[in-house]
Every structure is written in C-alpha cells, then in structure tokens.
Length: 287
Image 1 (cartoon, rainbow, N blue to C red):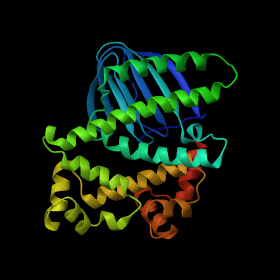
Image 2: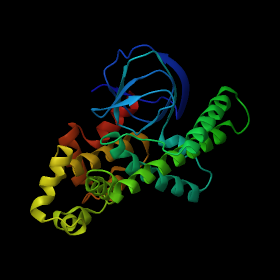
Image 3: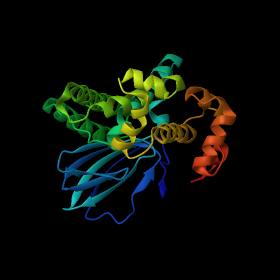
Image 4: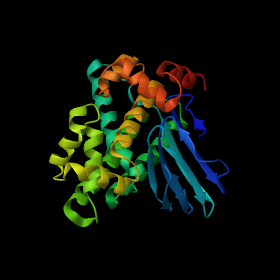
C-alpha cells in the first residue's frame, strides 16, 4: 500500500476534486477534513461512508483512506502530526498533551473501521465550522502567536469531535443499536492495550459476561478477524505511530504498549512489517 508523509508539523489547504485518481493511501499524520461542497463516498480502512456538504472526518495516522467522488467536491483539509500538538512550553503541558493524544487514538480508532463519525449536536456543527473558518484565516497570515493560535484551534476542534464520539458510544451502550457489546469490547481493548492481563480470554469473558469458549467466536463474527490478530494488529499500529511521530526509544515504546521487553516488540514488529523497528523509523524519516 502506498504511503504519504507530512513534511512539516502542520499543513492546511482548501482544494477542489472532480475525481480521485490515486489508490487509497496510508497517511502518517492526523487529518481533519470538512466537505465544503459536493457529494460522494469516502473509503476508510476498507469501509465506505457517504459524504455531503458539511460532513467532517477525522483520520488518525496509518488510516488508509480515499474518495469515490459523485459530484465535484470542494474540501478543507487540516493535517498535523503529534509534533505539532506536542509543542509545549512546560513538562506538565507535554505530559497532558501526550495523554490526550493517546485518548484520541482509543476514541477514533474503531470509528474509522466500524462506524461513521457523526457530529450530532447542531450547535457543535456551527461551532466547528466557525473554528475551521477562523483557522483558515489565521493560517493565511504570518502574525505573532500564529502557531500557538493554530494549535489552540485544532485542539478545540478535536475536543468537540471527541465529545461527539464519546456521546455516540454512550448512546450505543443503551441498547439503541443492534449489537453494542462489540463496541464496548473494542473500547476496552484500546483502553487497556498496555495491560495484557486485561486482554486475556478469561478476563474478557468475565468482564463482558460471556463464556470463555464464545469470546473468540463472537469477536470474529462481528469483526471478521480473530481477537488475538486484532489486539496484535492494533498494538503494532501504535508502535508504527510512535516510531514515525515521536522520539521515544524502542524500549520506551515496548514498556508503554505492554510488550514483555524490547526483544519481544522487535520480534512481533519484524513479523508484521518485515523490518526491525529501527529500520522502519529510518525508512519513514527518509520518505
């Protein structure tokens, strides 16, 4: 799969598309896309969702995305890396941003695989549109505190999007959707990806009131893949993000994401990517 990197911490542009000639690409950065005009389909991690004027998407690093355009489409795209959001003046701020980014990873991951992100509150739709407009105007002028203001605008937009995702997750847990259990299970896995004990079959069975023999069957039925494959794939995805967008050592990444040690991470990583973590980081930076 072809990949696309961000060559600076923050990019913003407004563009028109009449067709999408590229194959779906894997992007190594966060991206917020607002559809200003047009209709069509967006393709995210092999799932397809309709878009129209006013639609807003958030893509996380390593999502694979593309578009099937039905009518000429105009959109505003904001692209940024963890480096952009992590530019803080104090250690406390850096720790807060780091924790917040991890929460975003957990919140948005399954929305790009299993369901569409919807901004349900009309007031939030207007607020995001206003913030996007202000962000575009701030980006166009080279004025004092420009970078700090851009960072604040992006943070506000992400907070509003995260609020809507959280609200929809809570709604799904009330029984309003045919099968909310899988969403709760996926959220649990993402939240506890660094704690292997809470990802064991016996723990999941007890926590979600399922038999140990049925946990794996249920997960495969709803997601199309085995539980272990999903956990490993998600953990490796996070390793790829850390290698591409952070200065953490392989040992630090291993400790953060629940690997036994650096050797365990390296073996798993090479099995899925064909190269060592160090080689992957070097290749990502050279692209």
